Every structure is written in C-alpha cells, then in structure tokens.
Length: 248
Image (cartoon, rainbow, N blue to C red):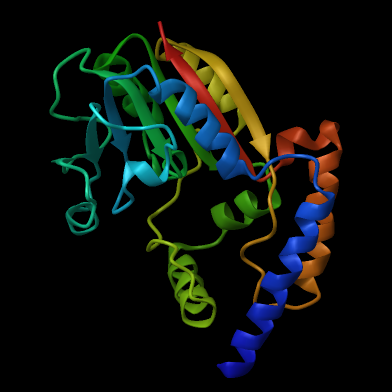
C-alpha cells in the first residue's frame, strides 16, 4: 500500500506539467463561470443531485439573500449538506411549485439520469421564463466516458474504493450510470424537446484522474489529453461537457 501511495504521489506531481502546456481552463473553472453568470442576478436556486456538496463550493459569487434548495434522493448524503433547505427527491418529481426558481445547477448528474427528458421537463416546470439549467458532466464520446459506460457498476465501486484508499480521493460513492444526455448532440436534442434553448455548450479537458495508480500509462494519457486540448477538430471527444440551457 505504501508503494501505491508513492506512485500516486509521483503521478499527481506530474499533473502540474499538463497545465503548463494546455490552452484551456480546467473544466471546473469553466463551470463555475457559467454558474456565476446565472446565479449573480438570481434569487432562488435549486442545486440538483447535490449530495453533501454545499453550493457555495460551486458558485463563487455571494449567495447572501438567495434561497438555495439542496435536492438529492440520497437522504444520508443530503443530511451532510449545510444548505438550509433540504428536499429528498428524484429530479423527475420535486415537491416545489411551478416557476419557483431562477437557476437549477446540476454538477456530475446527467450521466446518472435514467430518464433525462423527464428531469428536463420537471426543470422547465420549476424554472421561471428565462431561467437557466446549468450543468457539467462527463462526455460519453471521450475515452473515459466510453470506458465508464462499458464497465459494470461493481467495478466502479471497487476502483473508486481503491483510489480513496491509496490517494486520499474524496470522490463520492459511485451511483449507476446511463449516459443518456452526455454528448453535444443529445444535449441539443433533449433541450429542444423539453422547451429549452442551448445558450452555452463547452467540451473540456483536464489532467487524467483515473490512472494515478499506473506510472507511464498516466503520463501517456496526459499526452493524449494535451492533443484533445489543442486540436479543435477533436472537441466532441473531450472529457467533459459544460453548458447552460435557457427555459423558453
């Protein structure tokens, strides 16, 4: 185990080289920018599929005077969320009135939706006209998205546990994945079908995160990530999707 920790430490150190040569900001910074733009003028915000994550760790603009609803079906995870308003519910049916929110934010949720159309229709009901559904999620067409989609859930549970034990990762427990709204084209199609307009839709790359146990392979994938970062023709195959949908 000590050897594994040393390998992880070395591989994480080499991640710094990626950011010396990449052309784009880390996907989370891009997402925070999209969130901040939507949240700054907003009064009521739904943090959908939030788990224990406080929305103040997502948005960087002041949240004073804003109402934050933390919504998640995992009651245990939700109980650890410091938001004042907790709603234990699935995204297809949230017990809030029509037109009660200005923003719905969903970070790393889309891949877990078995029925994304139903969730977007519910979001349309909850948002006021002009309200925004903002999100970041893995891209199914990336190599990591394909690998995640093709491997069984028990393997995700095993591997994430291994990463937590060797690297101190704080990744949440894995939930089942479906990847039914995780390409540029499925986002555009489902948005149109459910009454949304696509305002922003970015693909992003950052350092590899699942290969820190494997020296050599980790650095080789870092080179692949740099190619994805720099070649615009490969944008549909980058690692993450980040976007903003406007409720019409």
